[in-house]
Length: 286
Image (cartoon, rainbow, N blue to C red; front, side):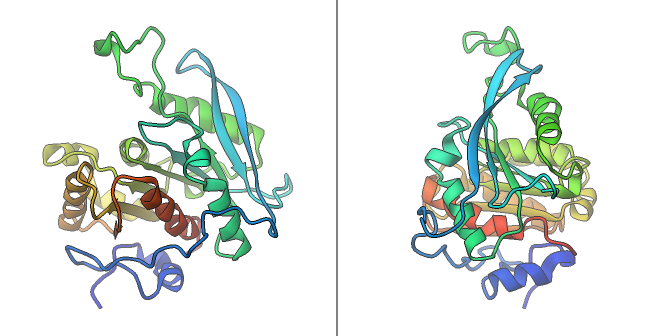
């Protein structure tokens, strides 16, 4: 078997979860097994986590903002939990993963099947404009220009001061779809001191020199990330080229990663399946 696209430190755990569908050093890796039927449907005969909308003060935006937070079944202040920060795409807001992505149902079902380590999942609003910015004045910043500061300086501190979580990079993951995938790459790879787990669903980060800017030190990425997940639908005409370019770049630079080509377009069934596949890999010990 050719060398897999993931860190050897937790290769055994991933192999157990995904065997025999692990991708290899190939241009077109074999598809991972799709999630089983009903994986995203709410079940009534199992324990459920709690999902709620939470308001916080954002200095980056200069206003109160909302995010959706999922706490796992049996959440207790007597335990400390890792956190997945899960980002939406350009057509949604902080409710996207809950309403369209069935994130709470997917997570509940994974817990019921004992496939998931207990974790919190935080779903913020990726549209964050700096004070004074407007869509009519794009030169003053985009609709997402303040999100990096909002996430790092407002959201994470709020979560870590209001919930019983582990406050270190080893216990923080950042993943998202489409626009959120780009944000996860740009913010996560820039702040390897903050995140040890990164996932990009149907979103790359350009080509050529842009990739050199995104990953100025490939060796550091390879050594510090516990998981680097990159995926796209096989019929995704928009994001496909960018994701494949990033995959090729990581291959060339020998940066360990999992590259998964799903069946589908730029759509929720693909991203739901990504969450189902990625969540069980997170926060595993060496």
